Length: 255
Image (cartoon, rainbow, N blue to C red; front, side):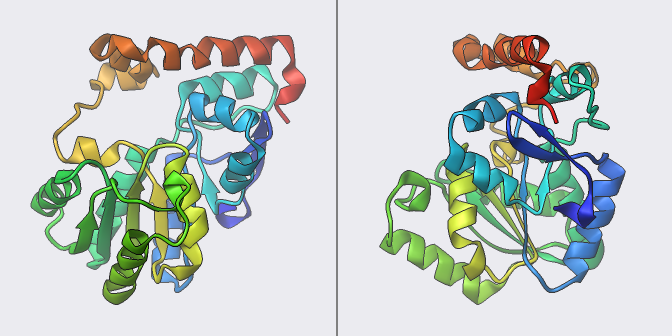
């Protein structure tokens, strides 16, 4: 748990009650230290899935920092009487990690995305944060524990590469629940300070996907913006109203 912060349980998923300033301070401390810390950033959809999957729920709860990425979690925590301070997204945490890394000259490894995405993301990162040492990158389309494949040669090679370059920070964008499973399985073999599962962050950094405009972000309507852009997401987005209704009819799920 980040700096012994209070955690709020929502459907059994334990989320740190912190704001972005507190998170930033903790990240600076972790990166100045010598231990590895894991970060998971569940949104409403992930919490609803983890509610039904104990293995994934336990993995998320084992994270050193677990932040509320979805606005639904903020609403749900308020309805349940245990209000979370604010939404702390994986993307914003990742950008703050880049700012800290740029300030101190820390190193970064990018893992995830389609072939070429991590490379492009790295190139764009260096344009904005030139003091970061880009230690390496690898696409996410490999056989490994995130796909239920154990002892994969591809995965072993990636772990060896990360072991050689010893990055301070590792971005893992393998999608849910693959990235959470991959981090949990391999964290003890990563010689790093911070490993974050940050979903589509690399796609945004590579310029492949646009983030919602600031107005949508402020109103907590990024989910609606993505739905407009990709109507096929409607089935996934149904997790939000289901979640809010579940909390309304059973406030004991928040504790």
